[in-house]
Image (cartoon, rainbow, N blue to C red; front, side, top):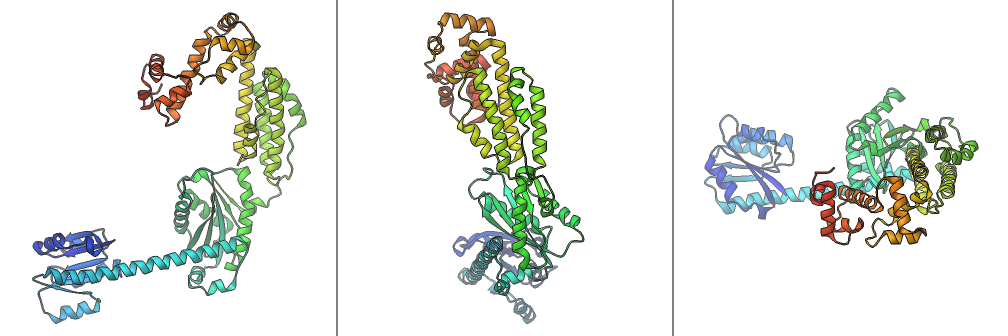
Length: 512
């Protein structure tokens, strides 16, 4: 859609044109009225069509049109005049005015002139859109070609590619890795546009494409920097200017002195991208860092693995965590070791933890598919570390419970957690599952924990309800079901008695 600006010091004419023309039918969705040339120049709007009185005090429409054309050379100019001064018309011809609307204004003639101007504007915008679409297509073909290690000399004969390379004396490829699951559908394209704009503020040229779902490819061009340090500083300044940069990893390729060197720059950027696992998101890493003589092999200390069961049984969590963290510091220096090999080593620790847990707690649900899959899918060493430390802390905490309450009460607690969402669960069912009399279990549990089984189960269910209300969009009735309550009204009464507020009020901000 188009923007038209009407400028006339006669308010009646300015308002009459603004209010009585079929603007929408002519494809004009915004009409700005100004009562002086100075008011028009002060406006932040840049019109597609200028309709101006040719003779106004302090500044003529001719002068105004010249200044508007400086802002938008494609603006179509239409003059309003009741004068026949040939000097005015000669000046108007030099400005390529679309036409004239004579006073008194004939609406049909005005519509014809403005419609012709609007039609020209629309055709020009369509051509520009087609040109931009073709340029984007050529840019994508060029970027994908060099990313695949190809360079064709005939590319430089293409006006767009030749224009990109003109006057540029060095080039560089950047891979922007996005944290998986961060973007909504279509979000990568928007981020690519934003990244291209941001890097374009620091470098003379920047082409960008979405290489795959979570990776962008940026091609930079500029004059040679004074030093490698100056180049790194400029790249980091561009990275720091981007929103959500902590969710991105930037891998920079080797600089190239001509477009022909871009395939090699892309290859070195891909080599550098493997450091993502070791450096994590929020970093910008350069190709020379990937080529340093890092360690190429990582092995977990066998003595540590053998000591893990003893550390758990002796409840020496601090010693265990210190040794685990030390192993991750060593792993961080083994950058030349494939991430899969590091994950394989830590899978050994997970196996020891699961076997120890099963042996101590007589449980068989430690070695689960989810645990192994989480290690396999870890995108960074930091993520792997966080997961293993969480699993380890859980096992030490369970051992503390096991030691404090004894095996029977510990088994009761585990069963209560498993049956949390079962509304039909009862102490009689619990006793049958664990092969004890219900009276014995109730008495033992109360003596060890200081509370009853039913009270403990209710606390678990209320905690689960608070978690669901705080972190999900589930309805109150759905929260009730997942918290082990078949009757939503009964759940609401229990929740209010326990927390002092209704579930809806808790979700609305009165969270305790």
